[in-house]
Length: 184
Image (cartoon, rainbow, N blue to C red):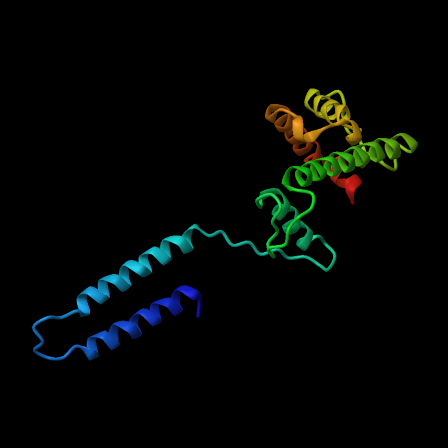
């Protein structure tokens, strides 16, 4: 049985108990009030349950499922607290900056390696060709190479618009088949 069905069965059980417990001929019946409270409580639970998005991550071992949640926790949890309640030495902004630096380092490595392999043997590695004549590709790569050296980039002080441009550039480059092939 699903969680919703279990709650419905519990609701029916409670309702039948209330119905049986009310005595015949009583002048004041509290069963209706209790029933309304139960229904309101169940309505609230249904609404909160509908707001929850459930995600099932499938993958073999060591494919990064736990890493994904750790990174999401580092990005979205309040500063200095993890899910287990332990204090964090680095603090939230430093963790976010570290994740951004790592992402840019790795993206630049993939782009460089794809270009390097393509230039060594263009027939064998034709699937790694990134068309720099396309304006969007060259602009995105220009943005990524601007922040190639993470030690010289202070991500905590960058403007939101700059961070958005970097994110858009990463997304555009990652969607290229050549980059996905190079990452394999």
